[in-house]
Image (cartoon, rainbow over all chains, first blue to last red; front, side):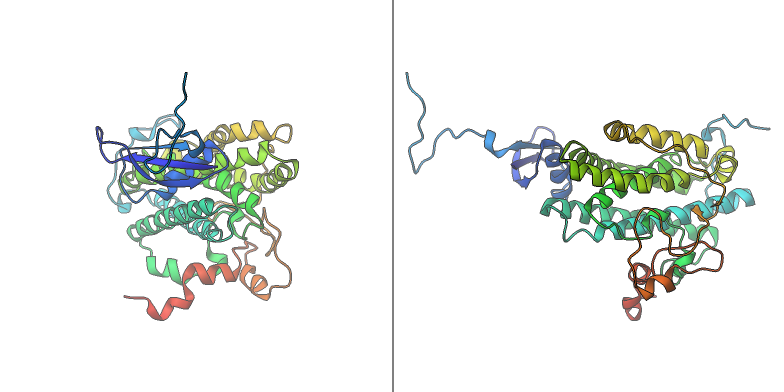
Length: 68
Length: 303
């Protein structure tokens, strides 16, 4: 499963998307993200499974938004 | 004033240099630092062996990060030995295998990923338990170095725990293999903390270490208990006998070539040469030590 990785450098900064890791479960995804994206002194870091992201729209193609 | 063994290390006067320690305490601490430095160095080498060939690219990168951490910890610990009168360059580059004081389970390369994770879970944890016990050491240069080291170890434990749980909750074959590796390794790791009446007691009384060998062994058991419960009913062996234990190198006196935890590869002349020693205390195989010492880079060593 692919997890997207987000982090911010300081408290109050916007969360940045910094990359992705592939891991079999949440626990290893957190471990891998910590080991791989360690070149900066981050304030905090988050991972989320890519397949839990919901597309809102895309400028180049229609994305169904639901209806009545 | 006489101090009871139960007093904490903080009750002892801090010292800035090894010269400020009582001679028997100084020698015991010096030997412990070499055990820790050699073990960190060998553990880093074992992690490095899986940078390529780990089951996932991400776990290979984790091994690279952990190897880098361990070699940093080793370098930092060897550096302390200068204050004890050691030639640090000679320690790092000029010793024979049987002079190494690493944990016995690090003598041989783990034969598979389950073996590497067993080292990650048990050998690395045992080293952290020992370093934690030095975090309020009366010898200040050591006390000041434990904080960052232990912060880095937090992620090693997370890696070990995640992978061990994956094995133990996964397919029967993976589970059986991890349990087999853990059982082969745990008696030597438990023994590594030393005999009850040995140097552990001296270091605790002197305010170097905030627990005796038995205290540290009990802390280790508590630390690995979450995995042990998943291994039940296989569990963890009872505390091993420590009759043949050498307190200086913290290794069992045994016939050469009989490293614990891993089967020795057959037919390798280097292994036989490397493991042999006069005092019955085997060490890592010579091929490992040649690489750890950096023999091939010797012409490039700078003064």
